[in-house]
Image 1 (cartoon, helix red, strand yellow):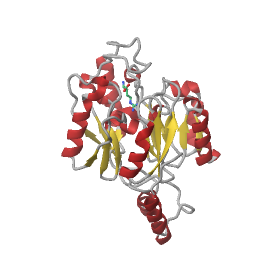
Image 2 (cartoon, protein in one colour):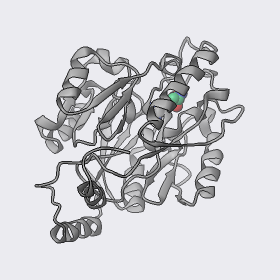
Image 3 (cartoon, protein in one colour):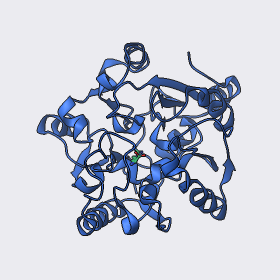
Length: 320
Ligand code: ARG
């Protein structure tokens, strides 16, 4: 079952016909628009509670100095090709550093998160204040619907489609209101392995139109949905070893991919597809169950593939 918004597709189709750029002649989508990411310094980062399997046994075990260094390297690498905006760290909300969970952005709209676990609920007001102060149209789901933002809601880079992970944190019932609020088709995927509790821990749409993912994190029906919607040549299957190193938790900006660690085989398969892979160790954040992608939230997501394609058609395939 998926949730689509007919009007959005008609609009996209109409524009597609008027444009010189079509899905057939366009190589998606190393856009010229410089990406902007929201990040939060790990000033108050620590593993202080256990809400996912990675945190078990790691309470108080994150090294603050190393975390700071690792985060600084990630920021400087991303800053070389993209903009980084910051939300101030706050005492008492150590996981605020994982800005991917603040909400999900599309165009000028943001749907705010409602955290499943009480430990993270105090973050909600900080994200709401930040988005309001920065001119976003702030939208909220019903109070009883857990939703963890861009941890579970990821825009495809080939089709006008939002992939939506549920089963651990976000509630399946968010799919329909998300589709309505963000005017995009939403495709739910059921997550079944507690180690891969957010969609962005095991699934990553890439700007060349591929999806990089770890199949065993999904139930059989969802694996079939992915195989049905994404042709084999655009599926990058990640091994358990790479998935456990958070390789799927990548920040992909144009032809660049930033991640904690990847095997030679995965790096070479990405290089063959035209990507440059930047391995930037994030061991201290893995102790909390997050890595590169979790530490960022893309703030300038295109409203449609038409916008993305038009932008990309104006200049060659380099981000930034
Ligand atoms: N400790 C955090 C939690 O369990 C980690 C969040 C990681 N974020 C992500 N987008 N996967 O909620």
